[in-house]
Amino acid sequence: MAIINAFGTLYIYYTDKKEIQFITELLEKQNEIELKQNVNMVAEFVSDIYSTCVSEESVMQHYNIDLKQYDSERQSEIKKNLFYTSIERQVNALQQEGHSVWIVEAAEPYRLVFYPKKKELNGKLLEIPIEEANNANLWQIYSQLLLQRDTVYYEYNYKVLGKSDYFTNISYVKKMPEFGWIIGAEKGEEEIYAQIRIFEENRASRIRQMLFYTLIVSIITVLLLIRFTFFVGNKFSASLTELMRALMELTRGKEIEQLVIKDKHELGKMQRAINRISESMRNYNKFTKDLVDNNYYSELKLTGNYDELGKSLLNLRQKLQTETEFELHQNIENKKRNWHADGLENINNVLRKQDTNLEELAYLVLKDIIKYLHAGMGALYILKQDDELQTPYLDMLASYALEQRRMLKQRYELREGLPGTCAQEKSTLYLTEVPENYAKITSALGAANPKSLLFVPLKIENEIFGIIELGAFRELQDYEIAFTESVSKSIAATISNMRINERTNQLLEQTQTMAEELALNHEESLMKQAELEELKKQIERLSKL
Image (cartoon, rainbow, N blue to C red):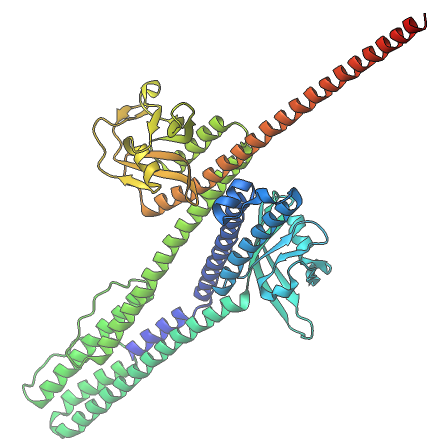
């Protein structure tokens, strides 16, 4: 009975409310991370798509539409249609994959921009009153919360028309002030709890099955021992009395000492059998206690090829090991995703705050990336055009912790050196065998060669804007390289926007200069006309004389 008690303890442990609460919190956190990733993904889509529709050149390059043949009003209409159609395609793709993402205007009357659940509501108004917030519109609540910060997690209860039950949703929203939009994603808690119920039912089923097997084995063992007892008769009454005592203690779940074997025949065989059962029960009891204490690597020696109970316990241990390793793996992946999202958000904040001075922006972003990756050194190159040779080249815009900074090569032609090769191939270049004569990383302790080098192109679609170079005293992980590639897209988009703004300002200055010249020419023409009128009057007076 000791093993039955041990299994009872194991069952209670694995149905404990605290464990269910832990699993619930884990799944809720995982769903929050998923919502955040979906929203950030759509926000990145919107920024990328906007850069393809902002000018005549970008529309021609990405959509093969020549806007010069249309007037300005028609051009604006075409750009807007391309912008909205591309975003709708991306949002609908996420909806088909099971991710509920929507976009709504950030100001009253909160018109829906994209609402994949009911596409017929796109461009219309939809009110979702929240009773716990005095029936305020859900979109108004989001707008007020986003006045204090850029992103918000929000949980709310709502009631569907025609039904008496309330439903709970968790949502993650983010504002995009440059478009006047709010982007959000949501998921019902009913989906989360469904996963928990399935997990709990499967686990309870396994425990009940193990308890049933244990009970059957115990009953069979007791019956066999009783049969042997009656078989030997009164001749072995003293030994039988000891055997019965041992059996009674076993049935009460008590561990017994090993019996002293005095007989070499049937009675001795029974004593040896009881000793083996007692030893097996001790082993099973210790093994189940180890499982309760989360020691999933405890060893259990089978009594033979037909030890089904021992095999079932080992199978249970294997399943628990697998579940634990899976949870650890999920925790690690969640930490990586959080690290990626937080780092990307920090870099984007720097890009938004510094949007005028490109050189200062390059240095600040480069420094933050190196510190976030715990890298040693880096450089940022921007792609420029040689006016004399009419060829593109890379110019170092910023560097960090490089030895002899002023003596470094500042310019690279395409295909020249590692930066030029990366720009020409338009793909990431990662090296773990660094040349001895390459630039060294400087610090307070001196200078040393990096152990790995990473070159990532700053590009949007297939257009290169520059290169980011990083060096470290260690080998970079795959998720760190993926993070650098994500950051490079944001940097490229910012450089593209700054260039567009610079060209716009130049055109404005040229327009203003031309207007001033026209005004000056007009004044001169008026003066000459007045002089001609005066001369005409003098001629008339002379003719009268």
